[in-house]
Length: 292
Image (tube, rainbow, N blue to C red; front, side, top):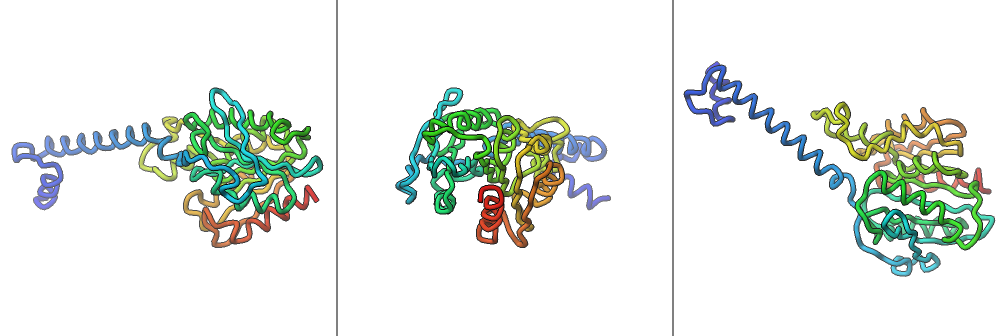
């Protein structure tokens, strides 16, 4: 017992008079205080931890996609920056919601690949990044997504049938795409490395705090509760070695989704390398099935 008491004294800095049960009680209170402080810091910094979009505003020509035009869409006090390419009246248009890192220009190679296949593209600059103003929140992202969807005829300069709209959600953007697909008619939905719900993911990452039990996550993005409401064809692409959003999130979403649905689990794929591991082929196959 002497060695244990010595360790406790070293950790807590207890003076000799606080040995015994009073010392241990004081130590427990210190641990509880540190725990509560850690929880408070996590709570108040959660949006800083979640959102990492850059504020840099690039233009399409700088990223070698001069066929795209930058256009602004008003949405609840902000102007949403979009990069738009109209492939023609009989071609699908992919509305692309990217992940929580970087800016629109960092997806330029993907946009180029989509345009080369003859599809229209509308890349959406997420609130708080890519030159889009405001502070990112789940509600703000949902409002911006609705605004962009409703503005598609203006952005493309032509009528847009809802069956020709394909929502693409990458990582963080998957929750935005699922929400919009529940509220607006679309032709298809593609989800890359999606999460089942942000509060589920947060609980997994910080399991030593009762995050979900006390409702501490502000932006829950509960796709698992909305995925069944998607009536359009759905493709989910996920990597088996994704350390950021484990593949079981994609599996749970797939199980909860209605038909028609497709999945592609890419062996050895991480969070950011799926297009190099067959993800692009899976997307092309899916699109060719419904938009030959």
